[in-house]
Picture (spheres, rainbow over the protein chains, first blue to last red):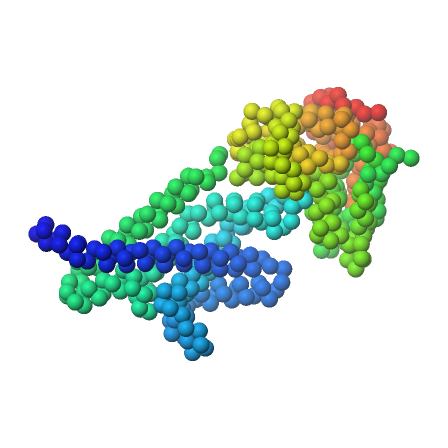
Amino acid sequence: MITDFIGEVQIYGPGFLLAAWTVFWLTILTIVVSWVCGLLAALGHRSKVKAVRMVAAFYIWFIRGTPTLIQVFIIYFGLPQFGVRLSPFTAGVLSLGINSGAYVAEIIRGGLTAIPRGQTESSLALGFSPAETMRSIILPQVFRIILPSITNEAISTLKNTSLLSTITVVELTLYAQTLIAATFRPFEFYIAVAVIYLVLTTFLTQLAAWLERRYALQS
Amino acid sequence: MPEHILALRDIHKSFGETQVLKGISLNVTAGEVVSIIGASGSGKSTFLRSINGLEMPQSGFLDFEGLSFDYHPESRFFPTATQLQALRKKVGMVFQSYNLWPHMTVLQNVIHAPIKLLKIPRAQAIEEAEALLSRIGLYEKRQSYPARLSGGQQQRVAIARALAMKPSLMLFDEVTSALDPELVHEVLVLMASLAREGMTMLVVTHEIAFARDVSSRVLFFDKGVIAEDGPPEILRNPQSDRLRQFLHRILHDEVAGAGAGYGGTQQ
């Protein structure tokens, strides 16, 4: 029994590790894309230019109102019609990043409203530009406030990478499906996949908890 | 004639339908300590905030150290963003709610602007900031975060933060109004010592004792205009009924505090 298990780990372990590594990178890159999109949309939402505000509002409205899977399909299967052919991995990062960005935008928007107006005023009064005020006074405070919500969003993103099995990204879910097709043992392999996801999300939670301690406002 | 450091002419400001400033003109000479008193809603805070452009006047003129603004929106002397920043670098402002940055230590709060805006080398900025903090008696707190400080301490750091830019004019906007009564004194003492050293100051305040003992000039704002402008003696001998009524109301509230005194009387 034990030797059976060790043997199986030896056979399937490296493949699972590779798939987990893929999930790890998918998640990291997706988070980067989502923060860029989210920050742009959150700031765009307060722009003085009406057109910019409308673009930001449309983006958030569209993304939050349509299924993630459909968004993935639009990018991967839809864009080639216009000559934009992306690898499964790139299409996955892009679509999940754009998707998560809309939620990140809402989180950042909430964080921005939590910063008192006086924080901006004291910086402007010293002679800082609005952009520099945003960069060194407002956003560092927003970051601290939204860290818990942004962690939740990152965990959702990680779990959403399993959707990319539908566009042939060989991540954990698709890898397990391939093995199941060959071995007819769905229970063991899906449990194995679930455990690996659990390890990854726990790692993310711990990282966020460390960041929260590191950057906590002393009070 | 002494040189005017700040000259404002015919400043108008409305919020929607409400006219808050109805043509304010004021010349301030270097070293003057001007207290601005008046009921809430009289426009005194808005006036102070219009000096450094936190509120943009709808019309009027400003002259300050070589900068000349015409606030009429179509004027070619309407301040650009860069000119406004240039003004703000030389005009320090302290707020009612301190507005220290909670994610920075006391020292970081004080050195942030000099390093970034005046391009002072970090070591020198720290040295100057530590001298300022020693002066306000908070050198020991330089590595603390603002949340660890009392309101009075925070407000003194806010004053140090403004002074670190070596301003030629300081604006104080009801800086003791949010403080517990027992913490008001330490802030006023610091302001009085600044006044004695010749800092030019505009002080919006409810502290009549401060206006009387420390300032060299008192403005009484009423309904968006300067209703009285004179030496602190006008607080003993108000010329207008409005000021007399205002003082009557205020002094009744602070009979106990009126005799405190800050020993900074300027001649």
